[in-house]
Structures are given as structure tokens and as C-alpha cells.
Image (cartoon, rainbow, N blue to C red):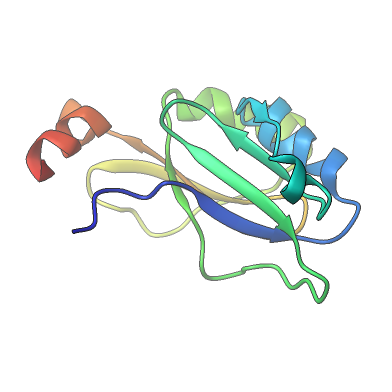
Length: 133
């Protein structure tokens, strides 16, 4: 039985750790967690909070994910959009999605990231987990 997603892994080119830290750590606010030593030698970096884990791994023949993407639930999307714009990231709107305010942004490597803020409390993670438990 499937329970939840443990983490999302995205690809990045070799040597992109500083750019990843700037985007995922500084702008999005996800804390970096050390990779296990046997995996750290491969490069990349991990960002994890209590509810969200994004792992970036080095891919030799790197190509960004332009269509496939993680959709991240956020609070205070307008403030996050302002931080992203101030940091030089272009924001891309799409057709409305009922129940959400949302925007897309590319990480420093061109991977597509969707940021969604529920418009009402019925779509918060706590409520969603209660209905699927």
C-alpha cells in the first residue's frame, strides 16, 4: 500500500550546488540537510523540512525537466513570488486551477517548479491527509 511521497529527486548538472543552495535554500527557504557520506561523493544536495524533501542529484547528461515537475504547496505565495522576482527568477502563469493560486518558476537549472497556495482551508495538507487516511 502506498502511503505518501518520501521525497522528490530532481536532476542538476555537476558543480551546481551553490546555485541549488541559492534557490532552494535561500529563496524557497528549505533547510539543507547533509547527504549520507557514501552519497555525498556523487555531488548534489538535499533540502528537507518536516513536510517536504527535495533531493538534487548530479546527472552527467543533464537535461532539465521542462514539463514534468513537482507541485509544492506554499503559504503566502505573493511574498514568495516577490522574493523570486527580486532574486531574478521569471514567473510563469498558467490557466487557473480551481481552489488554488499558482505560478511556475524554473530552478537555476531549468527544472520546472509549480508553486500552489490553496484559496481555502479545505485544501491544506492537514485536511487532505485526513480525507486520505
